[in-house]
Image (cartoon, rainbow, N blue to C red; front, top):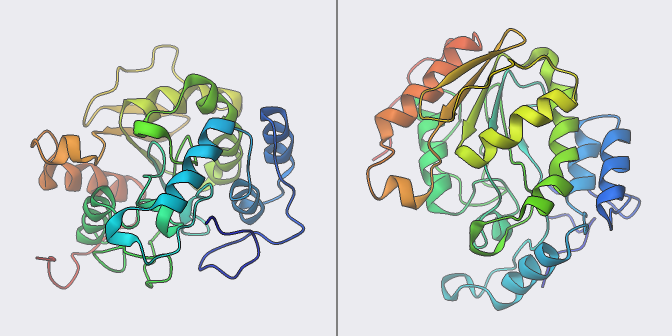
Length: 270
């Protein structure tokens, strides 16, 4: 069963008064009118604008995976997570069906998150190397994690219409965070092709020719650096297309660009 707003779920910013988007047009209005990041997160977590995604995320939350049968799934859109005034923005793809759709926090509770947060820990941007639940104490240093699509999609593949319907949430996050951002890390080609049109829609000057996505590719945008990184999906990490040193190099580069001067944590997780 999905969790309704205002239940006290760890990290749940919504309450009974939070307006709900039922159509893409509602998303555009509610995202644009959100006065701050907290309000964006609250409105994201109750969005119902994409019928296919609503049906799928709630079906998964009811049927569950056998390993998590005794757990209550979040079963709702997943808001971004991280520092209140980030200097680094990480843009993924969408929540995983039995990861963030279960735990309620981006990249939490699945193997992709294991890779991402372990790397953030190694480069000094996360307080711990693992992320298993929304209330496990993890904090991010100067970093915020979000996605172009906030609901778990079937087969991890949102449609173009679903991406476009969800885009205003990312647009509003960019408007709010851009003044202090110094680096944006994009995990995968889906996020790369979504980010640049969204930057333009936010009134941010984007190069006339955007570089083709690739691991380690960098683009200068309005004095900030946008960095490409292969997604931390099992398809990439299990095959060796993305390795720990490759991931650490991109995230460490973002930390340097952001002026966070990270120091090595007191021991690499095993």
